[in-house]
Length: 588
Ligand code: NOJ
Image (cartoon, rainbow, N blue to C red; front, side):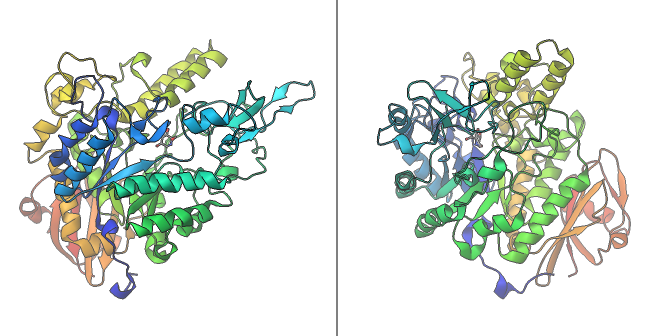
């Protein structure tokens, strides 16, 4: 059922589309092989012309870059390789001049071990910063061997606890050893986070993407996690730290500041599947955060115990995740963040379709259609707008740079040195799922290095050589049939029919099909149908047989102009081409 308009809360941030920038690989302006903020400024028109309202800048603060900036050593300064605070101010200005806003990344579950707070904290047990992090004494087994306080596994392999010889205690790090977790129980930590937020908001930032924000409150008993993976002592402790006991209290505090500045906020929330729990953070009147990134659709191809084990999925799984969140948020006055890609995920055409080379462009347009016309704020990750691909299969492990993937490889070699089958399988899975896939430099042109950096420079990470085959921005901006121009038209369509595509309801059509992804959106008496053929072959599809009646007009098609498509869609049975998506106005 669609709601009366009086029950719908309108908001500028619901209508916005976001473009995500991961600075190291966006655009290098000074030929040091690393992307930087002046490089971003030079490409703002590319983003604006796509129809974007908000630019999200991934962490650019001072950092030893163990985890590419998600290990922050100074929240008030910018990493030398990226620029200066003055450059960020220029970036904000450049965004504002084009009617866009800038979103910063708030990474406050942990800091770098090189942050001054942690250096102080580890210096002695009675240092005033000791309590800013989570320190615990050792446990001892029956043989008197020292053991970590519990069995939780780190997101980057091994125990979450690191022994500190100097003060004789363990500290907690849910991620890398060099990323100690802040202790949010300690009020000065919370105050310090509030100050950081105000600093950037006062500079003109319009809000934050909040890194693993649902991990900030931990069960203070730090109990052992249940054993799910019998092959290792280290187990997922998420039930004790994801959406922990004091999360909403902390989010309420952040929400007050966010409201004061009328910001956009999106929280990253791994592990949570409970819609009610998410609603407590994002429901309109809760004033915590606007929306979250959930993970079900990006965890879809993971193995039982491990992301880097083979996994399989069906189209109905993907549809079911979306249906749950779409309907629930609509019915309960919450909001969704919509994404296929980001800097932690592989490229969407490779993950969600089996498109062969000749179908890549059409498949990327299909994914754009299905994503952007759902209810929520769409996020486009750098390079997604030109259909960038995963790293080439031939690339050697030396080309991979990401700590998540490399730690996995190192441990595999250490603990299963002769298991060549496991090595081979892991290598195949890295090429499908490693974060490196989303981190190769953006391909700007057909010039050497894809125009990301100077022709004679060795970029910090190799450029995917397919920039020479049309996967580059310059070629695509000038080609009306490109993925880039299609993204621009789909984001325009979303705004043109704002009531339907932003504020309308969501109903699945042909739910059980493993070949077609279709849904309707309705706002009062305005209604649209979105249909996609998720296969590499032609399909016959009859809307009336699936309960869709009264097709009025085709308003978008991925293969041809609406004028050309008209004739084809005037029949009762439609022949949908491989990976075709089309959008229609229909009778309510
Ligand atoms: C999520 C970020 O997106 C990811 O890149 C990072 O490694 C972890 N959080 C830790 O900050």
